Image (cartoon, rainbow, N blue to C red; front, side, top):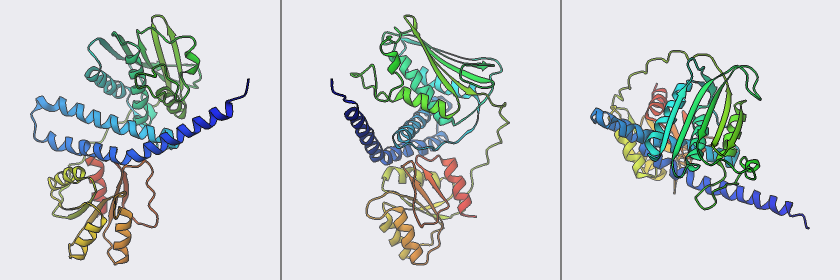
Length: 368
């Protein structure tokens, strides 16, 4: 029998390249869509009744999930390493994913969550660990098409397999039919899926293992006729410090901001948000429109520009302005995972969708 391994390896490499190219091509537009949601929710909160808060909470959660999903997919196909480790409450992680399940999962699935008393914090990238939990609970949901019980538990562990020192165990259990013996060895393989006709990509569990191991953790699976339990372990951290009180929103004091983005929705929502805080805003759909405003004599205090736009992008805009003697500070926005403009000074390069709080912090820094 001929050896087909090289051909199989080439096919797999080609598929990875195609997924990477496709993901990169949609990332910018997808993150611009999410930017509208992320920027719009805080604007609505000041105008609604308390009864509508739950709707906005779910919208905000959906926006964050979308952001996390596109970020993780980009990281998977490009091999990126953009992580932000911080001390995170396990109660927070379980509460967030539990609320999401109760809102979006069918009524035929009973959701149970529990965090053991005194469970320690974990030192992690919360975005990545939320993605791990999301992948595991969605797999559990798919294992129970007729309904059942999905349990999410977290507790301290003094000793766990593959771990050194105290850790926190997260376990996701379902009451489905279990994983077939023949399938079990393949669950961690990229692109392998037991659901070829229901939209499975085969990336969920490989992503889970890669993220957990990058956090110096371990992941296990137990399965049988009564269901399946996926467990992962993260090194335990110290109790969280008391969070500082958030600073009040700054007053724009009439500062004029040039906002440049080819997405009309992003321009509209970001303009409304900034104007509500006392800033004045000029908007442009590309760099050439922004250049025309500068040439017309507008006294702009700050440029906020998308990096990727047709005709004239953010990098070209700022280079052109510098060549003409303008020293106006700039903040760049990007829908891609690793923006790397060369030879251009900027206060910050923020990845879309950026929250209002992060954007305002950078604006304050730029206008000092």
